[in-house]
Image: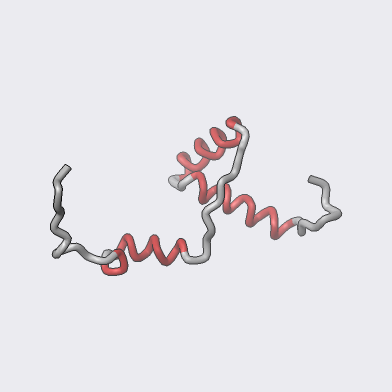
Amino acid sequence: MREEYDFSNAKRAKDVPHLSKLQAEAKDKTCVILMLDNEVLQSYRAKAEAKGLEYQTLINHTLMESMAYRPIDEASPA
């Protein structure tokens, strides 16, 4: 590892198109730690790979669909 690095020609993430896009997509998201059964995670990873998606995106999509079809409140069964 070098003792010093030259960042004089470095670009800001907002000036790199693919990084700028990622930043824009992440603005309305929150990072959480979620414990899932291994079987559930393996299933989502396999489905996501087949669709060319990230598994987190597929899980988020599934949760959004669930919210649209069945409102969740305190009276709803777990």
